[in-house]
Length: 198
Ligand code: SIN
Image (cartoon, rainbow, N blue to C red):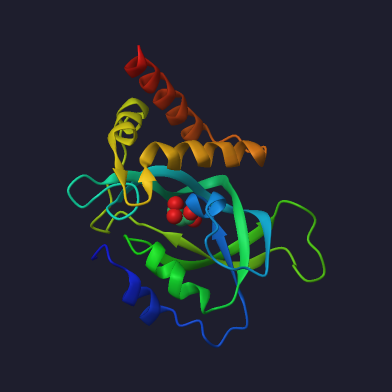
C-alpha cells in the first residue's frame, strides 16, 4: 500500500452524510489540535497499544531520513488512552492531509474516561488513524535505545522528532496516563541528549 493515503481514505470512507464524527487521537492528535472541534473528551479504546513503529516522511523526518512516530498495534486485553474530538465531516479534508503518511481511518468503539453524559453515550463510535504493517512508511519494532537514537537525530517540516515524543509524554502525564513504551523511550532519549551535552 502506498504511503500517501489521502484519496484512499476519501474513497473507502465518505463521511459527508454524517452530521458530526468522533475522532480518537493517540499521538500528536492529543497535543497538536490544529483543527476546529465541537467538543473534546478524554477517552480510551480496548485492544490497542501505542508503538513508535511508523516512519514520518512529512512531519518529523524527510523521505531520505524518515523520523519515527506512533501507530497502534493490536494488544488483546490492553487499553489505549487518548483524546476524542467531535468534529464535522469537512474537518477530515485537513486531517486526511495531516495523517497522509500511511494512516487509514477505521471506525472503533470509544469509551469515555470521565462520566458519559446524555449527549455522549458510552461506548460511542469514532474514527482512529491506523498505520498498519503493510504501508510503505512502516518501520516496525526496534529496541528502546535504537528508537530513542533514531528520534534524537530526526527532524522534518513540523520540527524535531524529539519534540513529538516529549510533548506526547507530557500530555499523557497531564492525563495521569502511564504508557510504558512511551515513557521508556522518553527516558532513553533524555539520557542520550544528556550525554551529548557533556
Ligand atoms: C494520532 O495522533 O492519533 C495519529 C498519529 C499521529 O498523528 O501522531
